[in-house]
Length: 127
Image (cartoon, rainbow, N blue to C red; front, side, top):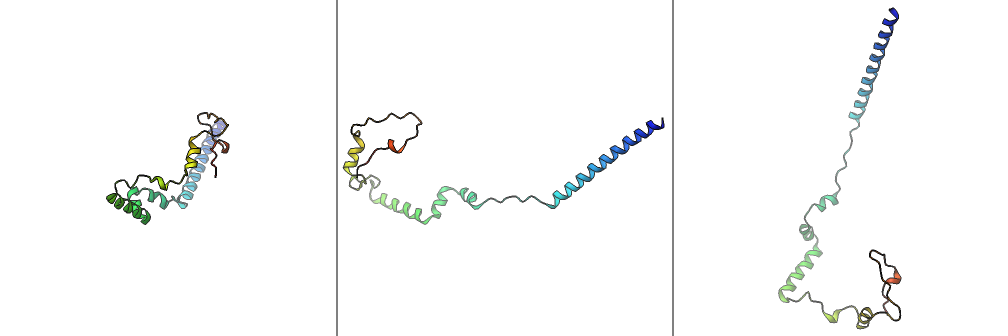
Protein backbone atom coordinates (compact mmCIF):
# COMPACT_ATOMS: atom_id res chain seq x y z
CA UNK A 1 0.00 0.00 0.00
CA UNK A 2 2.92 2.30 0.72
CA UNK A 3 4.35 1.63 -2.76
CA UNK A 4 1.04 2.61 -4.36
CA UNK A 5 0.99 5.81 -2.33
CA UNK A 6 4.55 6.58 -3.47
CA UNK A 7 3.68 6.03 -7.10
CA UNK A 8 0.64 8.31 -6.93
CA UNK A 9 2.62 10.98 -5.14
CA UNK A 10 5.43 10.58 -7.68
CA UNK A 11 2.92 10.99 -10.51
CA UNK A 12 1.51 14.13 -8.89
CA UNK A 13 5.02 15.50 -8.40
CA UNK A 14 5.85 14.84 -12.07
CA UNK A 15 2.68 16.59 -13.23
CA UNK A 16 3.39 19.52 -10.92
CA UNK A 17 6.94 19.78 -12.30
CA UNK A 18 5.63 19.70 -15.89
CA UNK A 19 3.08 22.44 -15.25
CA UNK A 20 5.71 24.53 -13.49
CA UNK A 21 8.09 24.10 -16.43
CA UNK A 22 5.33 25.06 -18.93
CA UNK A 23 4.56 28.16 -16.90
CA UNK A 24 8.25 29.15 -16.93
CA UNK A 25 8.49 28.63 -20.69
CA UNK A 26 5.36 30.71 -21.28
CA UNK A 27 6.72 33.44 -19.05
CA UNK A 28 10.06 33.62 -20.86
CA UNK A 29 8.40 33.58 -24.29
CA UNK A 30 5.98 36.35 -23.39
CA UNK A 31 8.83 38.39 -21.89
CA UNK A 32 10.95 38.01 -25.02
CA UNK A 33 8.02 38.90 -27.26
CA UNK A 34 7.21 42.00 -25.27
CA UNK A 35 10.85 43.18 -25.53
CA UNK A 36 11.09 42.75 -29.30
CA UNK A 37 8.12 44.51 -30.85
CA UNK A 38 7.46 43.74 -34.46
CA UNK A 39 8.10 46.77 -36.60
CA UNK A 40 5.34 47.34 -39.13
CA UNK A 41 6.55 48.41 -42.52
CA UNK A 42 5.22 51.82 -43.38
CA UNK A 43 3.67 52.33 -46.79
CA UNK A 44 6.05 53.68 -49.37
CA UNK A 45 5.37 57.00 -51.05
CA UNK A 46 4.44 55.53 -54.50
CA UNK A 47 1.46 53.70 -52.99
CA UNK A 48 0.29 56.95 -51.39
CA UNK A 49 0.89 58.75 -54.69
CA UNK A 50 -1.28 56.23 -56.54
CA UNK A 51 -4.21 56.92 -54.20
CA UNK A 52 -4.38 60.48 -55.56
CA UNK A 53 -6.86 60.71 -58.48
CA UNK A 54 -5.34 60.75 -61.97
CA UNK A 55 -6.55 64.22 -62.88
CA UNK A 56 -4.92 65.70 -59.77
CA UNK A 57 -1.67 63.89 -60.57
CA UNK A 58 -1.89 65.20 -64.15
CA UNK A 59 -2.17 68.77 -62.90
CA UNK A 60 0.92 68.26 -60.75
CA UNK A 61 2.96 67.57 -63.90
CA UNK A 62 3.73 70.86 -65.71
CA UNK A 63 4.31 69.14 -69.08
CA UNK A 64 0.89 67.52 -68.95
CA UNK A 65 -0.76 70.81 -68.00
CA UNK A 66 0.97 72.55 -70.91
CA UNK A 67 -0.05 69.84 -73.40
CA UNK A 68 -3.66 69.83 -72.18
CA UNK A 69 -3.86 73.65 -72.31
CA UNK A 70 -2.33 73.72 -75.78
CA UNK A 71 -4.84 71.11 -77.00
CA UNK A 72 -7.73 73.01 -75.46
CA UNK A 73 -6.88 76.30 -77.15
CA UNK A 74 -6.09 74.54 -80.42
CA UNK A 75 -9.57 73.02 -80.35
CA UNK A 76 -11.12 76.45 -79.80
CA UNK A 77 -9.61 77.87 -82.97
CA UNK A 78 -9.67 74.76 -85.18
CA UNK A 79 -12.34 72.09 -84.72
CA UNK A 80 -10.49 69.53 -86.85
CA UNK A 81 -7.15 69.96 -85.10
CA UNK A 82 -6.98 66.23 -84.28
CA UNK A 83 -7.34 65.10 -87.93
CA UNK A 84 -4.09 63.63 -89.18
CA UNK A 85 -2.41 65.65 -91.91
CA UNK A 86 -1.61 63.40 -94.88
CA UNK A 87 1.46 65.43 -95.86
CA UNK A 88 2.91 64.97 -92.37
CA UNK A 89 2.55 61.21 -92.49
CA UNK A 90 5.84 59.52 -91.60
CA UNK A 91 5.46 56.61 -93.99
CA UNK A 92 6.30 57.23 -97.60
CA UNK A 93 3.99 56.16 -100.43
CA UNK A 94 6.33 53.30 -101.29
CA UNK A 95 6.19 51.94 -97.78
CA UNK A 96 2.40 52.16 -97.76
CA UNK A 97 2.28 50.29 -101.06
CA UNK A 98 4.68 47.63 -99.80
CA UNK A 99 2.62 47.27 -96.67
CA UNK A 100 -0.68 46.77 -98.49
CA UNK A 101 0.60 44.55 -101.36
CA UNK A 102 1.58 40.95 -100.66
CA UNK A 103 5.31 40.26 -100.67
CA UNK A 104 6.92 38.91 -103.86
CA UNK A 105 6.78 35.16 -104.42
CA UNK A 106 6.55 34.18 -100.77
CA UNK A 107 3.24 33.05 -99.42
CA UNK A 108 2.35 34.46 -96.07
CA UNK A 109 2.54 31.80 -93.41
CA UNK A 110 -0.73 31.30 -91.60
CA UNK A 111 -0.41 32.05 -87.92
CA UNK A 112 -2.21 29.98 -85.34
CA UNK A 113 -4.11 31.84 -82.62
CA UNK A 114 -1.77 32.65 -79.76
CA UNK A 115 1.36 31.73 -81.72
CA UNK A 116 4.30 34.01 -81.04
CA UNK A 117 5.71 35.95 -83.95
CA UNK A 118 9.36 35.83 -84.83
CA UNK A 119 11.49 38.34 -86.70
CA UNK A 120 10.98 36.39 -89.93
CA UNK A 121 7.19 36.79 -89.59
CA UNK A 122 7.40 40.59 -89.61
CA UNK A 123 7.02 42.40 -92.98
CA UNK A 124 10.18 43.56 -94.68
CA UNK A 125 10.37 47.32 -95.27
CA UNK A 126 12.64 48.42 -98.09
CA UNK A 127 14.85 51.43 -97.42
